[in-house]
Image (tube, rainbow, N blue to C red; front, side, top):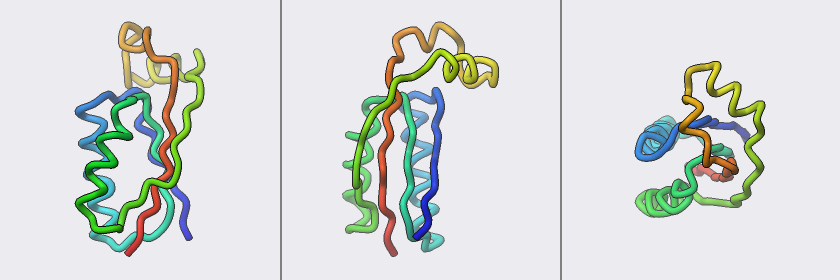
Length: 104
């Protein structure tokens, strides 16, 4: 079974959920089967993902959710990569890691 990672870096909702919907829809259309860890700073993504997964009749299952601290190194990397600006990251403390199982 494949294990993949989708790192949304500093992307916030609603754009973060748009990316997740597109990625999961494409994975199902292409009959991907395996685990995907979605990394996001957006705390509402888990709630939105749960609702979205309900539309796929058991093809998307949320297995686990955890969080890790966002480090200064991560923030600097996002800023240097033009993914975010410093002001957008001031209140960000955690990266949420959502493990999803995709089935055919």
